[in-house]
Image (cartoon, rainbow, N blue to C red):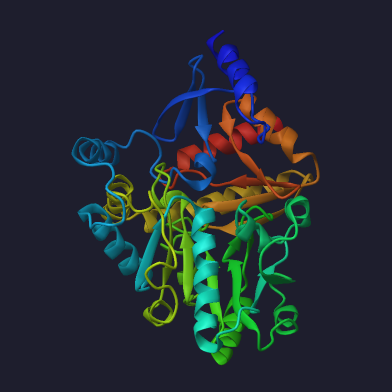
Length: 394
């Protein structure tokens, strides 16, 4: 009864912008979630690629508890130690030089776009620069992020959107070249398209785009909000391609549950773009989220999580391909590491719904892809358990 009461309360008071599944999660432990009725669920969604460490991690929780008792917020008018430490760690992990902490991935995209436009403005004092984005991309729900999201369904009700944005086809270098001109200031893309259906960039495409950017002093912005933070077996997915962006955005597993994002850039971009007064945030990078980010990087390194993802990711790929060979309704497998997708010829929403009924949390991507973005701490036994449930459903 408690479950129905909570759901009714939500439907009465919360703005209906989500079609929620009929479950009320109460707590988690390891890679499992538990609802208010005591039912147990194997989690292969991780809060949409957020809970990299799973649930109830004692070292992570303790770091947050200590910071809560010490200091939560002071604003960015002053320094604080946890965030300065977190900044050093994200720069060391990425090989980039300057970071701005935000409250979300969408805000990180907004900051990256502002940086690119200011960089171009500093060169020619003009405000008519263009950005190239990708069809079927997803970068967030704010107006600026929507402007570079390559899905008309998301954009149309809110047009006209800010900026001059042109859309190329992902993994089609010629389509990018056809749009580049003297007004192009940035090319933005996900290193692996997530919401669009789990499509990794090809090596040729990413290298080709990088070459265009270097030749014409165009900024390459790589969105690592979902595919970053170890999910592909590298700390950031672009490191597996050896293609370094001028600006990178990240969020989700950056805080492992604490709402935090960041945009990170090279020293060259930092020196020639945003100056004091150009950008700001009240909450971004406060001591609490700084402590979370700092501890996340510490635990990733201490536990060798990227190596673990390479091992378990290979096993997950293997098992998904065996599943594909067994069921005609699975038409393709795509992904890297622990960011995988199965393309289905049957209603993917129904599969996700039935999975939840069988104690498996798995979400969708695009119109026909079942998405697997579990906590990075899963083991082979959890992959086997997930496959067993999927077989029962299929």
